[in-house]
Length: 186
Image 1 (tube, rainbow, N blue to C red):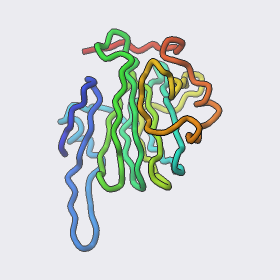
Image 2: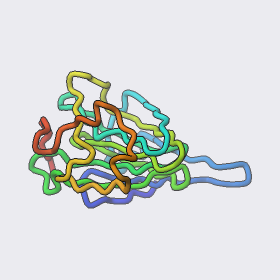
Image 3: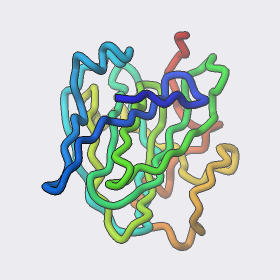
Image 4: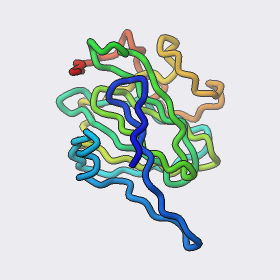
């Protein structure tokens, strides 16, 4: 597995080794031993899958500590723009975002550790989004960062009237209003 560093410490793109022939393809999307060797020592407790249509934007979600979630995400069908925002107080990149296109063609995985808000926009007609998480969903700890907060300067590549979004995500908080309790640990 090839590791691709991002400008934000902790966020990592992973490119699996894919074995392809006339029958199709095979790759490991997760191997605990290999991930530990790469420095990702997460213990995953749950796998989630969502299927969405073009224009659906889910996020930017996070859970407050001690219920925060690290997420290992990938796309098995279609294509999405996946975005993470650094919410770790004291981080040199606090409030900055990073985006990567994940698709069934590129087979990339994206590691989003605890301390980040996370969301994605579906670019294809449909997309199936897969993610492993390090903690269970805890409604009382669940928070949403406003996807189009001007202070975040995220280029989603779509006009706001084209976005299909939940009521919960529509009323997310700006970075300045958000409740955040993550602390950067170098």
